[in-house]
Amino acid sequence: MGAGRGVPMAQLALLTLLALPGAGAVTAENMLSQVAFYQRTDPAEQEAGEFMFEFDQDEIFHVDLERKETVWRLPDFVPPEVTVFPEDPVELGEPNVLICFVDKFSPPVLSMTWLKNGQEVTGGVSETDFYPRQDNSFRKFSYLPFLPSQGDFYDCRVEHWGLPEPFTKHWEVQVPTPVPETTETLVCALGLAVGIIGIIAGTILIIKGMKMNAARNPRGPL
Image (cartoon, rainbow, N blue to C red; front, side, top):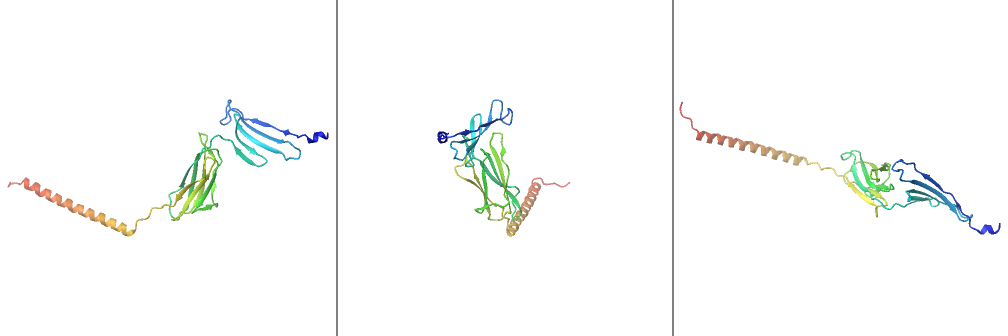
């Protein structure tokens, strides 16, 4: 018994769950499995464990239970496409919502951050879940209520494993500058003057045409 205490002791538990054929994208020719196990080589050591998710014996990710970390094992990362646009036409002083639309990315692990004039915004921000696409990539929306003000600018910063560094999409408040009243008056005056000149020129041409026609076709006494 005393000699047995120096021998490393190992304990192993294994659980595999097979997805039913026809569930989601899994068919009878595919196998989706989840494996959970723990192993201890010495009674004095704390239990170390791992949770693994695989598809057709290819690991997708595993969770290190001791470190509480998710480690992905996807062969390819698909970087996202980012677009920022307002929900409604922008009017200064009128409440609106900025939308950050992130599309065509995989895996569905993403961080989205709003910046206003270079400062991070936290209040009022909301996000959707990850929406799957038919090509097995994903899309996601983030919403930022804001009050348009001339000179303000916003950025949507996106972090994803498919990007070498965080990507920032810029957006600025752009409202058409109203035409000054003096300019409007000048434009109207010019338009009126051109119209009057056109009427006078047309009248002169009509009179000349009538005179020339009368000269070519003189009428004799009846």
